[in-house]
Structure formats: structure tokens, C-alpha cells
Amino acid sequence: MAGIVIAGAGQAGFQCAESLRQHGFDGPISLIGEEASVPYQRPPLSKAYLLGESDHQRLKFRDDGWYGEHDIDLRTGVTVTGIDRAGHAVGLSSGGTLGYQRLVLALGARVRPLPVPGAELDQVCYLKTIADVDRIAARLETADQVVVIGAGFIGLEFAAVARKFGKQVTVLEAAERVMGRAVSATLSGFFEQAHEARGVRILCNCAVTRINPLPDGRVGVEAGDGAVHEADLVVAGIGVVPNTELAAEAGLACDNGIAVDGFGQTSDKDIFAAGDCASTPLPFAGRRLRLESVQNAVDQAKCVAASLAGAPQAYDRVPWFWSDQFELKLQMAGLIEGCDSHVSRGDMAAGKFSLFHFRAGQLRAVDAVNKAADYIMGRKLLEAGLSPSPEQVADESFKLKSLLG
Image (tube, rainbow, N blue to C red; front, side, top):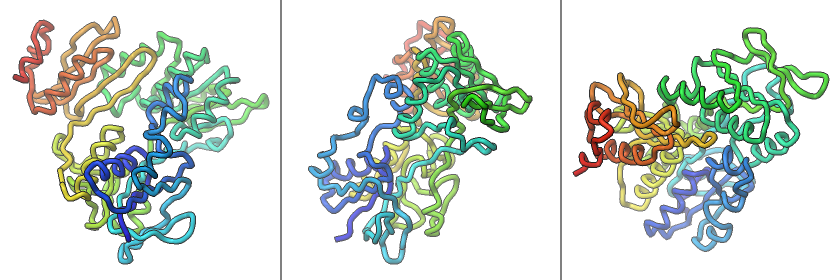
């Protein structure tokens, strides 16, 4: 009997399968994953796993036997190669086809490759899968000089780990500030100074033009200004590309990702999508967005599972994110786009503070560094649709909790 086929066994794919069983769905579920491993968490890869504080077993969402116990047909090392919408079947890289009643595309995103000569050299690595990190870890053991290309979350998290290992670390960022797509200029400045104070060299407005092999086995990373940065290891983190090709080839609507409605349904009523590959109308933002976060993958997948189980619930969550760099824990809720002012609480110099961002006097986002209480309270206010005034936030004695009743 055809059941539900989930293409992609990352965060969203796993969550959808688990949530379906939690909803009482007792039909066939097939979970198709391209990696050889059972599904695992990715966020710790650039932090605890690379530091040796976690291992593969602890990264797994569930033990290997859990899938059989819950009657989930997990197929690892396999990809979906095509979708036959009329025949309700997918092609598999392992050969043959697999029929479906409903199909879930949880295809994720792939790393954006460096578009420069020399990007194919062995010394150049990307950080996405556990195999990627194992390769980086092996090279990091003997490396002295490390160049990181891209100062987003992944790049800076890796830079912090490399520096903890005592490596000489240079970060090259093409934009004018670090984490520029995700955080305010104030927060960018704080993290840039924090990294530099811990020995990381950060160069912004520094686009890489090529990577050249050197006679001693290292490489020279050449920037637009002509400077060459020598390295034993290069790690590139310049963003990701949503995996939409399968959907597009099948004629599904795509719009900066596989376009879905508030319930995760694509332009085909029997095909759903969730996670990094999907763009959805987000009420909080007032427009369609594609978000790259664990929270989004989990919550979208739960909504898809609810729809498939006959208990539909629209996706309507306030986005939240986090990043760990050195001893600094950054927690963010909401979206800073369009914000015209912010108010700070706490002590930025001491590395324990929060920024409350406003648009036309209404709270739209909260960033907290080592100040979890402010993050939690700000997130609750955003989820409740409540806004303190900038003056209330500025008053450290004012109890934000009082606004929740």
C-alpha cells in the first residue's frame, strides 16, 4: 500500500516522520536520506562535535533501532531522483520507484560553492555534513594557519573553534560587516571586536578572487586588493542554495524555495515541503520567506505532519535562532528587517546584554548575548503580539514580565 514518502532525512524530514506517528498516523512511512548515517543534528557540528565534546552517537535524533520500532522505512545512502506526479511515484538512486499517497519534500539546502579558481583544491573545505567536519578535524590537527571565507554564523563559529585550538585564524568577509544578513550593525560590531580580542583577524570588504597552490603544500588565498593570505586549511561558509531542482523539474511552483502555503502544501495537493528548501507565507513577517534554522524546520515539519494526519494547523511562529561563539551565546527572536531603532539592556562591555529592536515603536526582534532571561521574555512578548515601549525597555527596573499579565 502506498503511504507517505519523505524525501530528505535531515531535521525537517525526521521531524515530519516522528510527528506523524505522534499524531497516530499508522500508515506506511518511508524516510529517504542521502547520507549513510541515520538522521542526526547538524548545529553541534561546527561547535561541540568539532571540539570533541560530542560524538556521532550523541548527534543522532534517535537510536538506530527506533525507526524499525516505529515502523518507519528508513533508507540511507539513497536520493530521490525524480517525481512522477501523475503516477504518484518517485524514482530512487538505488534503482526502481516508490509509490506514494502523499509526498513530503524535505530536501534541505546545499553549501554555496566558492566561485573562484582554486576552489577545488584539497585544502578547501565546506562545513555541512558530519563527513565534512571529520575531514576538517583531520586537517585542523596539523594546520597552523587557517583562513575562513565568510563571516556568517558558520564561519564565525568555526573561527572560534579553530582559535580555541590555538590556530592562527583569518576571516575574510566580502560584505562590510560580519553576520550582516542576520544582525544589526551594533551586534556585528560587538562580535567583530570580540573575535579580534581573542586573536581572530577579521577583514571585511575583502572579496576572495582566487586560491593558489603554494610549493610547500599550503595555499594562498588572494583577495581583491591583491593581498595573499597563506593557509594550511581554508573553510568556506558563504551561504547555502535551497535544493529546489527536483520540485522545479516536476513542475511545482518555486519562489526562493519550493513555494508552499501556510499548511506546507505545494502547488500539487499531494505534495508538501518543509525546512530549508521551502518558502512559506509567514504572518509575523507579512510576506513569503525561506528561513534557514532548526526552529523553522521543526515547526514547518510539525505543521505538515498535522495536515497529513488530518489535523491541519497553519504555520504561524515567530522565528528564532542561536549561535555559540567562544563563551558568547547569541539568542535571537523575531526579524530585524525594517527596524528603525533599538534599545540596549545590560552591559555590552561585560558581554552580557540584549538589544530590543523596534519598528515604528513596535517590538519586532530581540537579540541577547549571555542574557537568556531577556531573550525568553522578548520571545514571549513577540509570540503574544505584545510590545513594551522603548522607554520601558530602557528602564532596567521595569519588569517586562508584567506585560504578559
